Image (cartoon, rainbow, N blue to C red; front, side, top):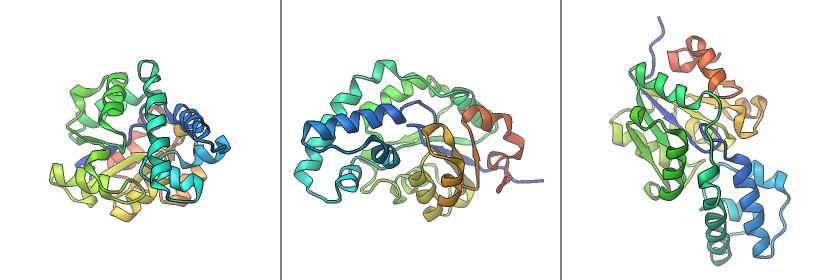
Length: 225
């Protein structure tokens, strides 16, 4: 019989809460406010990078003053979405199922504390969440492993005892570097092929689809489905 993981680390933006395109729009507007016109398709493909990386990635540079201004504008713009955020299909039930299966449940995100509070309010699953991380807990965001390393340290488990669930290639890359299986969901707007190429052991349309296939998934201890 397969051995189920002892913990699940869950990305939140685009994985559990429907924010990927809101973030895309807010970054597009924030960049425009500071004189940079970047096509939305490029911005969307960068979603999942932390705010410490995304501006430099999109502008092919690392001007810290410009980056700080754009990040501040994005934060203000995205705050206007806080009251409109909604969970993705099956997200709340997935968190509960992981808890009921005996796993330690961690919300492992590069979001800031204010944004995470809004995301948790939209998700309404705190009864089944054991731990969380934010951007303040890591020096470097995904695809570096800092966020995942901090989460594992807090719960006292190794990478081989956990599974990460995420929606971006950056999630998959961070999990691969950490030595942790990554389950990909397409609801952030990244295709199954791209997620698998980045390292996901399996992919599903959204949390509801993952729940439907629970018994064949890495969350039940089966990898490579």
